[in-house]
Image (cartoon, rainbow, N blue to C red):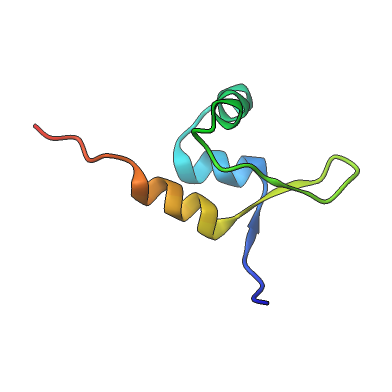
Length: 63
């Protein structure tokens, strides 16, 4: 087992440029964003690799 860096919602928002927690939760419900790990007592964390993979999977904009 390898230990990955775990990110808070605030850190995920900074890394992705998503400005709203509501937007993150809506995307999770649609299956369009990685779901967090639940450590209980309201402590949710995302694996940094999951977020990195999601960012890298986004289509590139062509001009």
